[in-house]
Length: 100
Image (cartoon, rainbow, N blue to C red; front, side):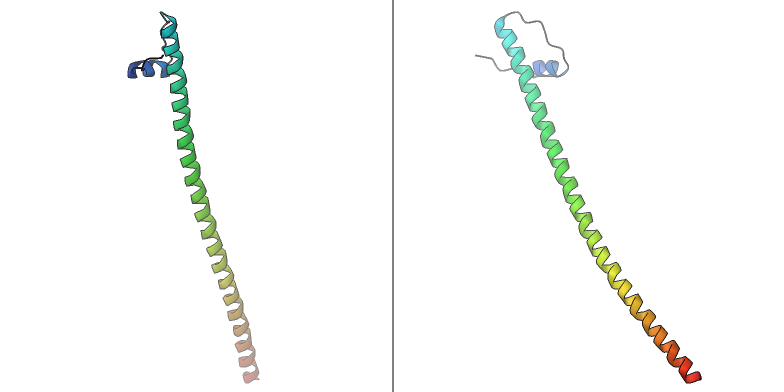
């Protein structure tokens, strides 16, 4: 049975400072510390990366929605501009006809 590993042993394993084992039990402890540290570190990193990915995905979705709204606004303004140009041409031709 492997004993509970101290915090200093975990820190040494993270830093690559692993003592030469005095016994098979000590070797098993070091293997356990290394595998636990590695698993915990990987799990923590995976969790952090997953959170970052989720935040980036949400931000991309927000920007896509903003782009969609801006595209709609642009189309509405383009239609209004075309209508204003058409009315301007109509009024110009009406004034020209009145002046003639």
